[in-house]
Amino acid sequence: MMRLILFSVCLVITFSGCKKKRTPMPPEAALLIFPEKNSECTTGQSLGQETSQVEFQWAAADHTETYELRVTNTTTGTTQTITSTTTSAKLPLAKGEQFSWIVRSKNSQVEQTVSSEMWSFYNSGSRTTFAPFPATIISPESSDNVFKDLNNEVTLSWSASDLDDDIVSYDVYFSVETPPVDLAGTLQPTVTSMKVSVTADTVYYWKIVVTDAEGNKSDTGIYNFRVL
Image 1 (cartoon, rainbow, N blue to C red):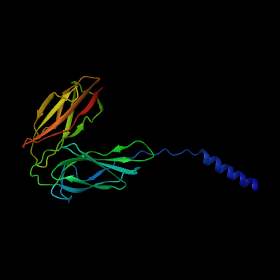
Image 2 (cartoon, one colour):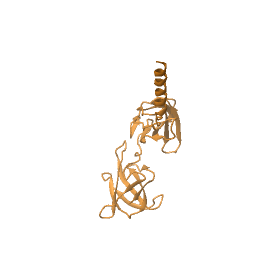
Image 3 (spheres, one colour):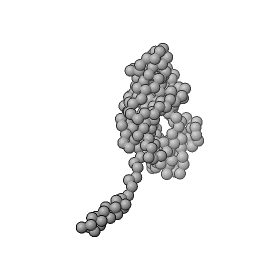
């Protein structure tokens, strides 16, 4: 009987030792909720004439321990950062200014972090007119590898939004240099795509500048892609 017990214990130890350790899973991207994309945030708690406190909210991401909220004033380029273990965080923001925000998911068991989409919004204030939001690049996405078509062309596409709904034009800058300085075309607000001539095995850089009826402008920043 004792031998049987000892044999059983040895089997348990042997099989337990053979089990492989589970590889830690990297965090997944959080889905942003509020402030909504390309909107005016009117729910901030006023902290005085110049500032209000805005609460940011996002959905829980799998395999994530902490979230890093990064909010950038698109005019000044100033970024505020705060870490949270929950799916919300509050930051004081200047009234009447445009901001962009992302959330980075983190897990202490892995070095990899992942970012959410980037959303833009206006923090409500005394402003009566609004600059357009930066255009959203649809394709090619940054660092994409793409194939040219039979005409040796690639289609650039984007979308744009303005709270005043008075966008008048898109300036498309496109070149093999960065920053792209060649104006490939100025398009009407109803046109959100453009074909450009390309060469294989070449990296191209591009950006969109949106202009509204008041002369306000917004810039996407530089995107790039490689033609295979």
